[in-house]
Image 1: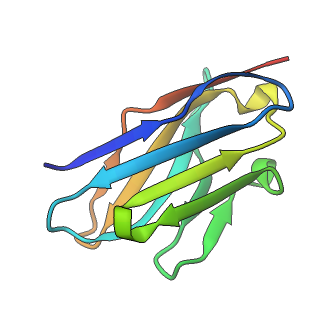
Image 2 (image 1 turned 120 degrees about the vertical axis):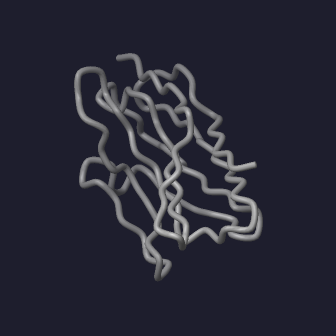
Length: 116
């Protein structure tokens, strides 16, 4: 069964921290890379941080120095450590999984709310 499940969202005050987790089940299809996107109210979904196929990482300029993406490849898991959170980080965070067949998978999203 193909499944992508996020967890770890919640409500936090500005300056606080949250850690998101994403576990992917893709059956026999190998994962190429994984990452995190978010959608703020009224905005388009945007990249937050991701791994690329060669193992390097990409971050949105707005989160550099505050967020850190990590992974456990053996467990098909990716994490997003979010520190020094700001109200503008509020949104639904989605895990994205790209597999070697060229397909993309998305989780259902987890809400992150940062109060001022």
